[in-house]
Amino acid sequence: MSLTDQPCQCPCCDYYTLTERGAHEVCPVCYWEDDGHDLDRLDEVSAVCHITLRQARANFAAFGAADQAAISLVASREEILGLRRELRANV
Ligand SMILES: [Zn+2]
Image (tube, rainbow, N blue to C red; front, side):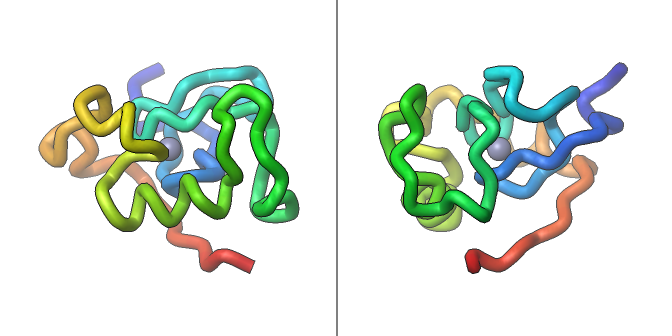
């Protein structure tokens, strides 16, 4: 399966980059590690990412990565062009 037809939405950047949820896949677009947190647990600190999903989503909006350390690791703009994304508002 290519990155352009993954079935599951990343809880941080809202791109469809994951093959399944809660399986500790690292999203190539924002570098959030998916521990199963979603918008219903925005303010719970992730044990693996060490920040809240709300903070990670704000980080992605501000500088394109879930946290500062991932800025140099995330996919380039060209790489994420064409990926499916459905923006969700923080609740
Ligand atoms: Zn992501």
